[in-house]
Every structure is written in structure tokens, then in C-alpha cells.
Length: 148
Image (cartoon, rainbow, N blue to C red; front, side, top):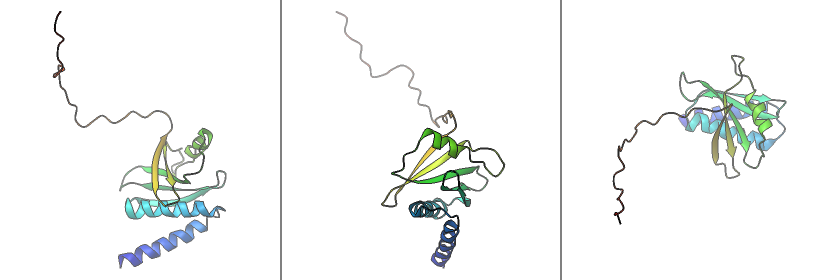
């Protein structure tokens, strides 16, 4: 039963992607693989597909979990060269609330259908602090040199 549901949803989403009128069939294939990965493997919520005529690309907006912030996901062929200007243009795509996205997940799609996710942000992002900090105090295990 679940397999039939997944197949029918996948077929419906593929038709929706083809209706976005993007001329590049390899981009369409990449977008479909990323959509399946987001919805079936990673279990993202509220994944919607969109297109940008200026950039000639298909992209997704979705949430990693219920109540999680909306994220921008852009599938690209791994052979594609990305420029700083192109990344800035992608980051300038507006979210449904009218503000630009602060980060984008670029998904490189290889010819063997493997996917690699890279997050790009607008500016520096402070890293999360570690869960556990190992405080060793004085350096132990270090030998003193003998006095001559």
C-alpha cells in the first residue's frame, strides 16, 4: 500500500516539475531525485517546488521537521560551476514571508544519482558550542627534560 502511495505521489510531483517549464532535462531529473530524498529518506515536511526564470533553475522550500524553519534547497549537477555571484542571486530568492533566505542547501547530484548537501550562508555563522568540553587542567603525560 505504501509503495503505491509513494509511486503515485512521485508521479504527481514529476508532472508538477515538468510543468515548471525548465528546458534542461538533466536539471529536471536532478530536482526529482532531490525531492525524493527530501520527502522519502529525510522525511522533510511541507516541501514545495518552485522555479526561477531569471536563474533558470528549479528549487525547493521545506522544513526538516514540523515547526522547523523554512529552508531553501537548490539541486545542481555536480559538473556545474558555481560562482559567488550565482550564489548571491540564489540567496536573494525571497521566502514566503517576503524576506531573503539566510542560507541555502546546494545539493550536488552526481551521474550515479548520489547526492551531496552543502550549506552556504549569507555571512559568517557562529558555530554551535560543543556538548561536552574535556577539561584536562594541567598537561599530563608530558615529560620534563632533565636538567644538565
